[in-house]
Image (cartoon, rainbow, N blue to C red; front, side, top):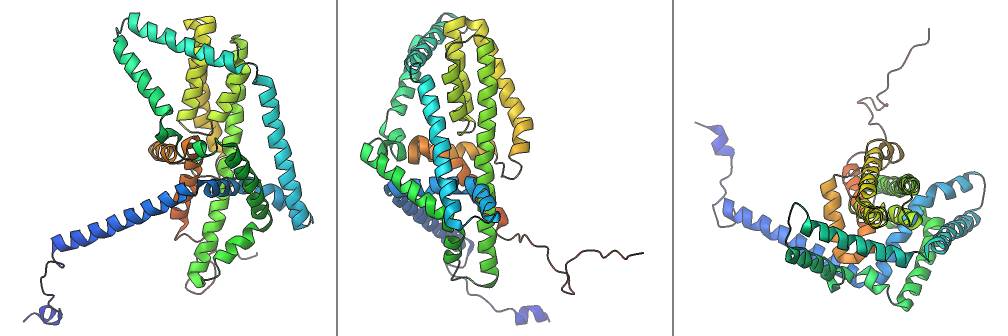
Length: 373
């Protein structure tokens, strides 16, 4: 006699309890989650004029948090520290942008014409070179790229919406206002959202908030440092090789560094095309070597140091995030997609990982006591 069989209740076999029924229920749940996520993303895209300033304000507030926290620790009032941080950030950022525009505004047309001529020369080399690529294939590929960059899919989202002057001004004003309140009352705002939670859920919410602030701020500050170092190193190399338009090319390298993988590669290709037109294939090859060497030094030595507090993502995750962000929000979506993905993964890792050490069975922290001799 088997007691286990007597005590185990018999579940009637129905279409919902067999394997196929279980698989159908799980599939329906997955489809429901995908549908809900799609509706949320569609709603966010429709409200891009509000969503994008909020996201940018969160990123900037996270990056500026050490400044305002340092001022408050020195006894500066919260409102005064907020104004100092906000106005100081606007002056510094606006001054850098103004200096860059004044320095390179007369060279953009020459840069574009040199890049176009470099593409034509490269196309002619592929046609007449040893590989013997068909001219029609190159023309079709070039047309496909141009059509994609000028299509409604690529332009849909933040960049296309911000093309209108009214929306651009509105988004900028909204960004400044939201950033002010995030700098002043960021912690209180997050605590307000945590009001309904108690116990472990409250601790998890606070842990997620601290983790997101640390990862996002570290990512932005680290990326800015890496971008500045890359732009300086490549700019010095271009100047030594006497490649024209070294300054605007350095600016493009700096801006492209905020789009991982694709940005640095595109900036290096553009610099090589300009060098190909101005100085020939030999100098263009040296420029490519310099760009590759700088990127390798950055990835192996600089990033592990300056971005140690942030979260490194697998290149495949970055590529998928960039693609999704570009489709949804254009260039702005491509810039925002990677830090958002980094924060999402940090939240997933910190979901059930308390920061404080777990107590022992006796209720005291698990630390060894050293007896004084």
